[in-house]
Image 1 (cartoon, rainbow, N blue to C red):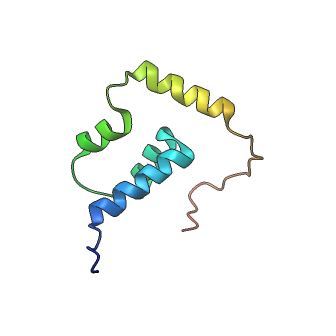
Image 2 (cartoon, helix red, strand yellow):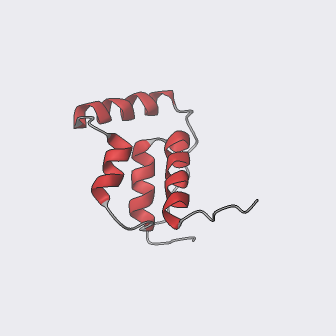
Image 3 (cartoon, rainbow, N blue to C red):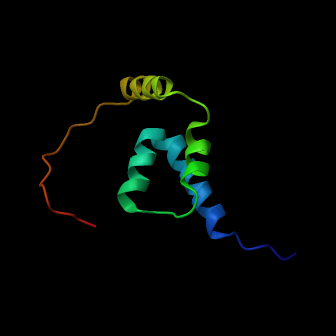
Length: 84
């Protein structure tokens, strides 16, 4: 039985869904913006991530998620240094 190879879009979609499930919508959006991953239809991606939620509803979800997230000790950040 021969399997069809996954398209790049399918892989990106699965990875985005995994990120949303793991770190939430806001952090996923920030990550994708910072890494310039993906291309294509921003409006379709926005619709998939946020649907018809209002800004207030999205903000409420972010607040609830940040309250329930375990607190981590923060490390000082050196500005202008990228360790990628």
